[in-house]
Length: 236
Image (cartoon, rainbow, N blue to C red; front, top):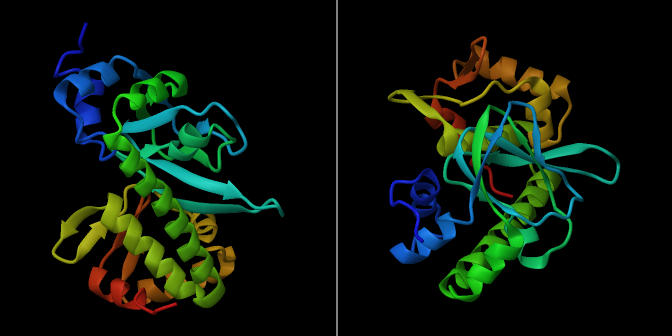
């Protein structure tokens, strides 16, 4: 039995970088393992410390990745959108989740159960190298975040995060303007760059006066992407 080449799970698997090089029959077999999950806005998909180990693929929506420090403070690590995957670390080592993933918008996911997926991967060694790349990406991202928090001012950290979100998930609304995909409050931005809401508010207000960004009722719009990128260019 094989899945339809047009099935939603099969179509998504072909777009996900981790599985994009699989043969058509391998994609068919893997798609049969995947099950659909709808996640409402604000719902937690996986929680730091849990031990389910399943792999998740984003078909539609936007999700927030965060960790909670030993002091209880939340640190936002990034956002996930269409064709992104999460759960690689727990899939590989079977240990507790290293982060919490929460739906920023209503989201549609396909889930690959750990046990069945590992059995499938035994016959698809070409994915192993990509899993190593995924682990390296996690390490590099965390290393960079630690360096930024220890060495860069709040304004530079915030500029970097907004540029990253714009590049990965934004919608271009003009030659040098990008709308971000979700409303980010001062607290959201503070969680992303580990700063106080007051410092975020002052920085954002200054950028608004300079015509770099503005807020609508539902989102942030970057009005001058080049200037914001220049503000983010300070080296650690």
